[in-house]
Amino acid sequence: MIAARNSLLSLLIVTGSFGSGLAAGVKARAEVSCAATAKPLEYDCTIKLSDSRSGAALTDVEVTVRADMPSMPMAHNVKPAKAMPGNEPGTYRAHIKLEMHGDWVVKLDLVGPVRDRIVKSMRFEPKP
Ligand SMILES: [Cu+2]
Image (cartoon, rainbow, N blue to C red; front, side):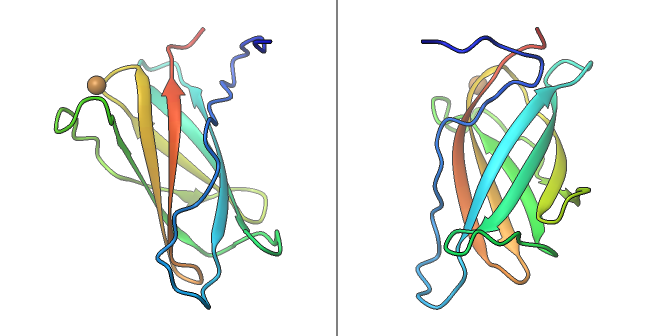
């Protein structure tokens, strides 16, 4: 069953985090959704960070968003975007500019109270 598309594209395909392997460190879980904007290939992304064990919101984290296309090595050079804190605790907002539609890997680098890297596969499509 394929869910109907809405304007807020639900792009989350893979959940999970790939941590640095530090046993004592807090690991982050991220929910990421990106919505197409009026500008082609520009997306507003909302990121929700939580402690993967306790579920507590992760605040005061410096989040850098990077995007690359696994199917096209070396082809793209998307500028990393710094996320800004959102309205709700543990939420962040980032604006990204891609170079084409399709399947991208979005990498979130977290620095601050939590250090982690979260990698997600996401499909970006034109605004409906
Ligand atoms: Cu490409």
